[in-house]
Image (cartoon, rainbow, N blue to C red; front, side, top):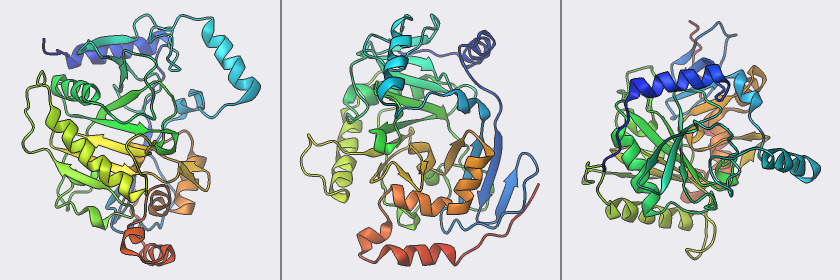
Length: 345
């Protein structure tokens, strides 16, 4: 049976759970930086920043993210968190570290393999997670056919455009172990002359070679749009792109863990190899590699700007120059030699 999702009802339920304290969300401050300059939702000091050929970045600064637990806890703090979680019911399964004692957390069951839920810490309204019903499935695993089928079913059922993002391993930005896919509002498709933010392949003529990092991209021209279809061809495309990611990271064998990000929409799929979780203390995930940066404070924003967004992404990914055989400092010189003109609104 096809999944049915009423978007207005989802919005109403999302808002209700904010009031009840199950979800943390407040409208974020947004700052958009393009190769033409800077646009901010609130006044911002003058910026001069190089973004090279990336076209655009969108920073979302949301202080509610400060409430989000950190994933790299060890020792006594990790044991204390585990003991506190154990005292509460977890509606996402006994193996889940996405502890949620909200009895209304599950929106729908998808294909009997996944739960669709609201994200507990949100920068969009609404924002979803797609989790495996088997709570012992882990985030270091590559996507399987059932994961792709479930993601496709949700993207097909939502009445407004969304996209799916997967962070495979903590190196690729995963903050929890229970296997999950993020489902996020898809920015509008724009031409090269538009200033508004959009996903990289949705902005005019897309050339992956223009990016500061290596990525592997495939249009989905011949995929059945029927959400109930068993899309083995989608898995074939993913596996082919993943093979290229393994080659870029010099990983031998299908059994070895392969850090990568996945972006999926109804028209295309992109995989991004990841070599580092962070650079100079700044970490990012799949959405960040698309230029959508989520931050908890203005200090974090200033840190990104001080180091340079394209420089950060080239270091956490695989630089294009690593493929071309030239040294990384050549990339750094190229980035730092182009400055955008600041525009304040």
